[in-house]
Image 1 (cartoon, rainbow, N blue to C red):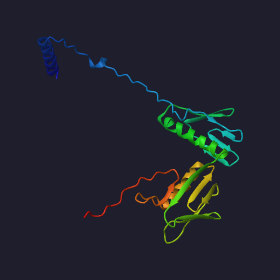
Image 2 (image 1 turned 180 degrees about the vertical axis):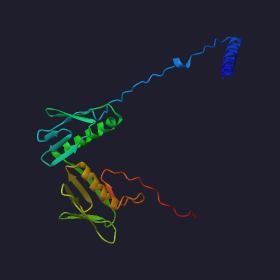
Image 3 (image 1 turned 45 degrees about the vertical axis):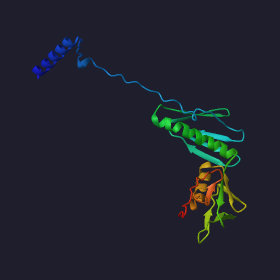
Image 4 (image 1 turned 135 degrees about the horizontal axis):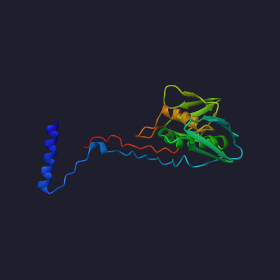
Length: 221
C-alpha cells in the first residue's frame, strides 16, 4: 500500500514538472465543509393583517379561537407552529417557529381566520346554474329537489347552517357563514351532473367556463 501511494505521488510530481505545472497535495484532514442556513421568506398572504369589524367578538384561549358575529359562531384550533396576536381591532397570524411545516401553514391559517371573520359578519354565497332541457330545482322545506334527467328526482337535505334559494327554477344560490360548508354542498350538487363538454349540459358554477369540444363530423361525400 505504501509503495502504491509513493508511486502515485512520484507520478504526479513527474507530470507536473514535465508540463510546467506545480502540483500541490492537500492532506485530507485539512478539508472542511460549511453548512449555510437559508431562511425561508415569509408568506405574502400570511403576513397580511386581518381587520376585525366592531360587530364581531373574538375569544382567544391558548391555541383555540372562537369568532362570534351577527350571522353565527365559528371556532378553530391552531397548531403550535402558529402564533396569534391581537391588537385592538387587528389580528396578526405569525410563525411561532422557523420550520418547513410552519411555512406551509402560515398562509393557510391566515386565510382560514379571515374566512371566519368575514363569514360571521358578512357571509358567503355560491351560485350554480342548471343547463339542459327539463333540468330544474325546487326547495321544499329543508330539502333541495333536483330534476337532472334521471328516472327519479334527486333529493338533498340542506344543512342547518346553510340557506338555499332557487330562482327561475334553474338558478341555485347557496349561502351561509361557513365558507367550507358552502363550497362542499355546492360541489355535491354539481357532482350529480357535471357539465359535459359537447353541449354544455349539466350543473355548473355561475362563474365557471366550460371548455367545449367539437363533435364528430360526418363522412364527407
